Image (tube, rainbow, N blue to C red; front, side, top):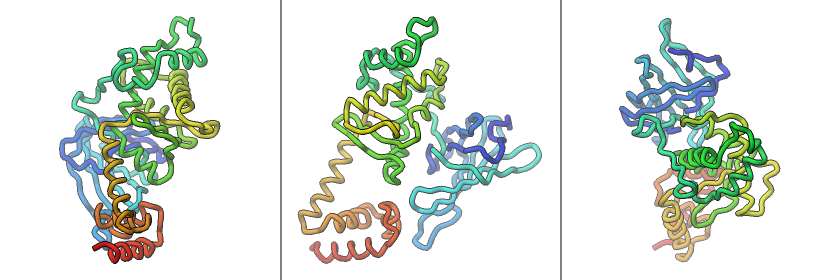
Length: 317
């Protein structure tokens, strides 16, 4: 190993698709001190609970220097994971037992990790940001007359990176909304504004930037301020103690929302209460167990789901 994974026990293993189960998938295993490219060579289900849900899995990896690693993941069933990272050195297998999953295994695209970033002056994935907003953020965080000052095109490149990361990891952000670590405070036909509390997701995405620019504190401050301004333009919300994350919706999000709303509202029109409709949707239509659906919606008394589901079935023909 090069040392990028052989860090001390305080390392946070930042790993973006927990369920990467396709042999040959190229991924990055990201640790606090760096990252290494790896390829998924196998995926094992180790243990199931009494209802057949996976509670332990192992992702096998081959590091690009031909050494091996594996990540054993214990899943509590509602979004919390306890991983153990093991890697092979010349001496023996070593284990990190205090790694904390943040993002999971970050998939690389077909361009071998190089992202196609759009910097065309406002079109495509940064079209929701105008040049004036970018210029204002540069002026308040960097000396515009400095020879190395950031330019509008350069900041737009970073904005495009953050937007593309948001689209690629959209399921991760949805998980954060579901477990209440992030909150939707506004949305319209094209954008969504999240409040991520004291965690700066914009800076987090820029930590993984692999383009031609050198991203430091000033650049992160500029892009973060732009997200603040975009959020303030769209909604009346206090951002003094919370970071905003503003993203354009990926294609298909509105269609998915319409689908779920149509089902749940249709069930209510057939006589179900909102709680009964949601229980029926989660268990009978989406196929969750009653326990898992209760956990997902934060209701740990699974009898509530059972009772609502039973009443829903009695009302439906």
